[in-house]
Length: 100
Image 1 (cartoon, one colour):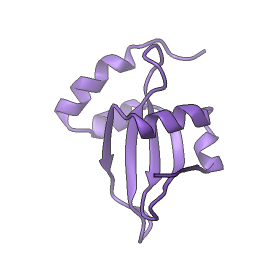
Image 2: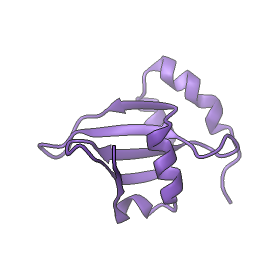
Image 3: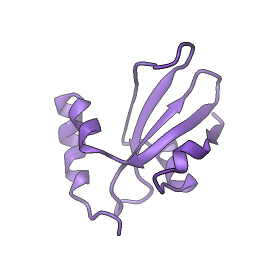
């Protein structure tokens, strides 16, 4: 699937390489409730390398392409919305050193 990265996905300092890595090799992914009719948003949680903390990426997959429109460091609030089993798997990743 072709990955398109919108400018809005870069607003929090996440690189294109990190966004692509989270989408192509996610630690976890799931469909999320759309805010815009006709879209199929998906949440990807992943990271570029093991030494980095995880990031969250939201992308619309409705067009046969994966259009990333949001990316940032994985937030506690996002983690809190996940089911308990998924959160327990990802929680140790949050303890990884944060970026400077």
